[in-house]
Image (cartoon, rainbow, N blue to C red):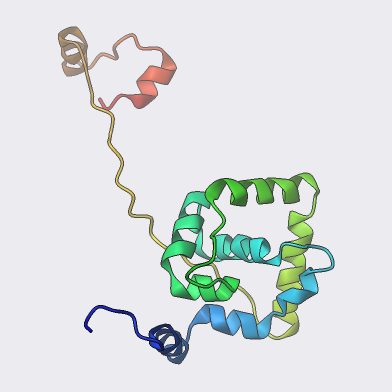
Length: 165
């Protein structure tokens, strides 16, 4: 039946991703993330930190991209039915690492693992196509006239930074 998922659809999709040279699959073959387990129980959460560093993702975008991208799910060892950590969980995990002074050490170890195998990480970028409402300019007639006359209206500095003159 058209539109209904078949038994091997996911496997076929993963095979296509592998054939196209999935960089995250290569990363998994280069770095044994289990070396982090004695120091860090939540290896999957550390992998999310790696994804954020590689792709310049905010916590919100990391959550979204993990839900959306098969390559990210496979990198993290998640199936389609598995629960994805939300942005707050990601933030709390990072804060715990920073507070414990462990973040720099973990990434230094990660870089060392790559370097030992002849690799180094280059960060990329996933463009966040969020659409946000721009604040509307509401200038009084007097303010508009002052701007036309080349004067700066007497706004406090915080307000002046937000005005488009």
